[in-house]
Image (cartoon, rainbow, N blue to C red; front, top):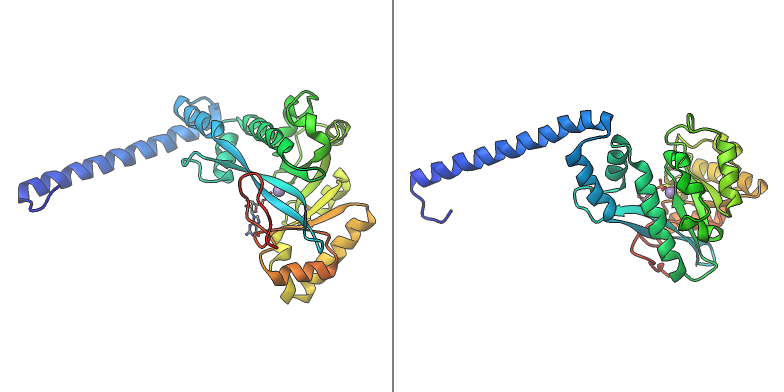
Length: 281
Ligand code: G
Ligand code: MN
């Protein structure tokens, strides 16, 4: 509308805006309601089409894992992202994938995209890739001809107990199969509540990743230092490598270095970014 306005034009404009707003709201709640039932049938065209787009726009962001105190990049963790603005983060994508029963497509797309990036990364730098528990039900993961399997020797697969590993079949047998392809295994988010010491015993991982809740403010808290020191020593005794996640400050970095935690990851070194970000020196 252009100024000056007469009352009539103004009123018409307001009515129109209200109608459009109501329409938009109605459409939103329809998607929500349909979404909830479509979710259970896994069979709603609009949501599935929206999700097709999100999956086609998936890209892996990479965050360095740094050998400390050397300051050399040991590996990169691949993190799920989509250029689809309708899915503003990995949790939104995974939540929709779970509702639509399309988790495997997300895993396949990520693993294929990571496989494409690996040849551009100098050895012996490794790549860490997150697995969704449901990925353990996907044949593609165990296929020696799948794109990522060809690079298995440079890949560490991260598992978390966020959802219990129940109902996913013979976990030890599946882990053996994955290892036989040449992949290494990491337990993610240890200390976050869902990943407990039982997962370390059950999976016998090559690498353990300590959750950022253990790292936050570690330089100012002796008890936190004791916990992380004990876990680091335990892992070393078991022959496992250790990554501390979510290092955000110089103080946290130095406290972890003093404890002897060999690998560090977090915003202090670099945020996740397109292949492959350098680190702060
Ligand atoms: O569950 P997992 O540990 O894979 O999740 C890693 C997540 O943590 C990613 O989404 C990543 O963007 C985020 N992240 C990485 N480094 C930091 C950090 O230093 N601080 C915080 N708060 N988040 C981080
Ligand atoms: Mn992870």
